[in-house]
Image (cartoon, rainbow, N blue to C red; front, side, top):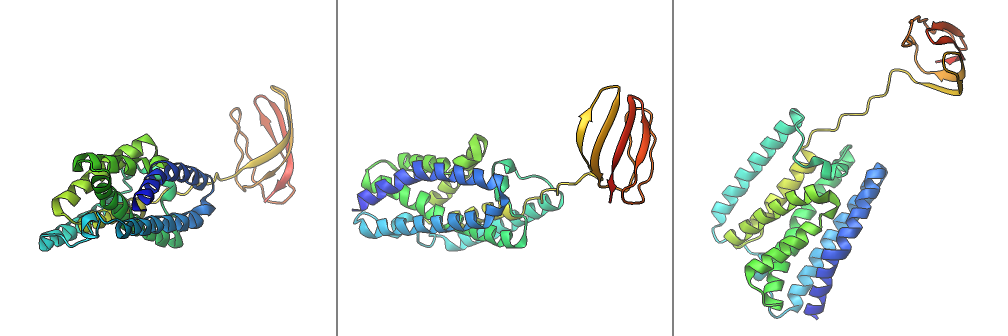
Length: 287
């Protein structure tokens, strides 16, 4: 039973989840209104995967909680010191990059996940915590131990397979983003092996995601032009231009030839001006 569940989980993580993730991320890029729904779906999926991983551990006679790293580190005081230091450094770097508007390396790969509102920031925090806890349990904890115990492969091979599946799981970020994910995953794997516990990798994973999602420079708001002209008509070169449109500014209108401008002060005012290419007559309403 545990072998079947493990095999199905690997197939899902290596094939199904990456394709679904790429499609949902593409939809989010097209429509920001999906942010809340997508975030909740991703959070639910992460915790569901973690529960399946724990179920596999419970059903397998060769796996236990300690075997997947859910134990305190052997040198807990050192690990806690590393966690505190890493937290301080991560927050400091994040605040500096945010205040000075320095883009995070590879930020374009996950730009759609960066929150824009207060409600979205809470969702992003929940997503960062969920990813840090659940992905470490699944990818670093279960997959490495599962490949070793169920399929009897050496630990380096098991770690390589788990890292490959972890990287493919971030297919939506494109190949550049996946390179960064590979480097981060390798570092977290080494931390896991050196401490014998998932505690430090989980905390650092959360810090990485929090820094990426919440401490990145805010995207500059898109600026609207001072005035726009919407017209429907015909344009004849070096001749007469006649258009009916709406002028949305109370400023001046400039043309690339001889420039004459007039102030729009009343609704339905008709302005005539000389243009080097010919005569332009604009009849419209100004507001």
